[in-house]
Length: 193
Ligand SMILES: Cc1cc2nc3c(=O)[nH]c(=O)nc-3n(C[C@H](O)[C@H](O)[C@H](O)COP(=O)(O)O)c2cc1C
Image (cartoon, rainbow, N blue to C red; front, side, top):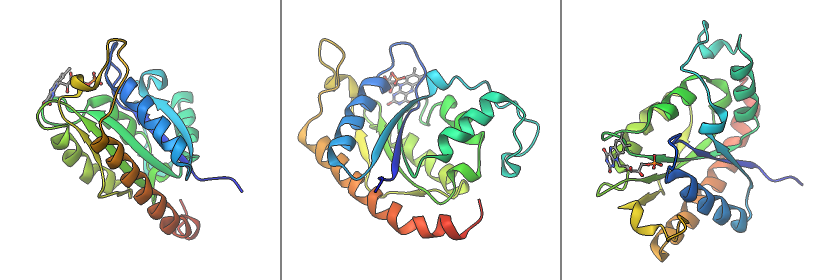
């Protein structure tokens, strides 16, 4: 039997972003945990322009090939983890744009947060994201991974080297996402997208 698909979304699109090694670490831990088939999705590669669809995403009538491709990608996800930085006490614009593009594709799916930044560990950004994901009918896991002073966890090659607290937090969030995914699956089957 196939496993549900967990999409780990790299929100930062900057050259040299920390988001890439953080997301690679999380992808590894999620794959080893084994509840999900894990896909890494990089918003820098997806490269969506600023929202340029004339219709509201609720209608799901997309004009542009990039919107249709993004719709197909997110449609196959059963759960999401947003790996996101904190920019100016909120989350980054590329992530908001990517969320705004779609609607039904996000609906009734659980979402977890791997936030990072300085002293706040990206928690202000995570808090700002919660009403946005709620509007898209996603359910956030209460468990989260919040990484303070993220640069301290990078080695000389730029790889992310977590401590036990972060590993433990990731495992807890993944377990909760698996429970939520199972509980929300019948809802997705019942409610027309
Ligand atoms: C535009 C910008 C705004 C930032 N604002 C904050 C902030 O409000 N709080 C914080 O903790 N870190 C802030 N930072 C530092 C980022 O957390 C840090 O640069 C991190 O590496 C950014 O993630 P990225 O490398 O994946 O893009 C900011 C960085 C940038 C580029």
